[in-house]
Image 1: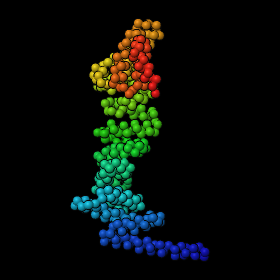
Image 2: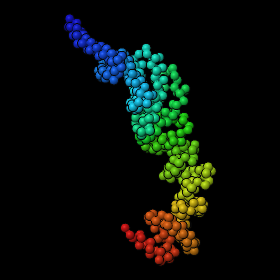
Image 3: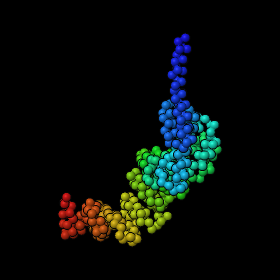
Image 4: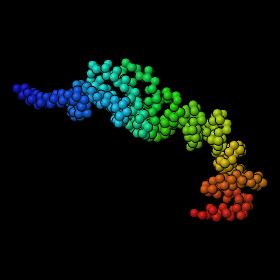
Length: 384
């Protein structure tokens, strides 16, 4: 008896709720028929705030129709070149897609009609991402590209085989990867990066974004591997070579760094960057004569570059120190004499780099007994 009373009370409580729901749904449908789509959407979203309504297929279908009506109104205004919020138009397309996917998870009764309709407007999901991308709204643009890509795994679109037939998928993946990179979010950057690499026209940049994501995640091994792949595929792309050189230098892998410069110079023997990298690597490896050779070659190509003068001057100073250890004063003095014009020219080109050239010139002038020049450098070094 008590159980019967409880059931009766539950029915009495539920019936008014169902009646209210039915009334509001009927009201929303009337608004849709009369073209008051925004009013219908407001009513339906209010209904969906109640968790008991979220599995009601009729509410979701009406909700889809309400948003579709607004989308079509916006499309007409844009076609007629009337004033309309373009961002709102694209937002409605994305909203329809989300609603349809939810509805399809509840019932497949409308799958064919919904998929046909959304397949036709799906390019506007891509276009919405591009629109927001141009406005530097990286997070918002990412949502559109992700939705575009996600269609491939949705049962709603299983008949369209987007992964194999949609040629814009790699491009969408690239822009999603780019948006993740611009947000400095390594997880978002990497999410579609493998697919983005299929866009071969932009694979060099994709590898850069992947490398930066690995760096932010402090995954040093994969970071270096990505740099190596990037250099192997795109040796003259601006990003990979200098960072790979830095990585090898930081790990003390000078032989790898030297091999890298050799590979680079086979691609472009007159590259100032590659020649300077080889000069610097040889200097670090204490192969001073070879370092000087590449510095002089670089100076011949471009006399206005400062750093080759510093490398050559430093190499000669180090040679002088070796001769000092051997107590060969003559050869030591000759080496300092050769170092002097290089370091003085570096000073001329880079006067503000006193911390680099002043200590070296101090040592040169001291060992060459150049009193006047030594006194000047001594005063400079004592200045705060």
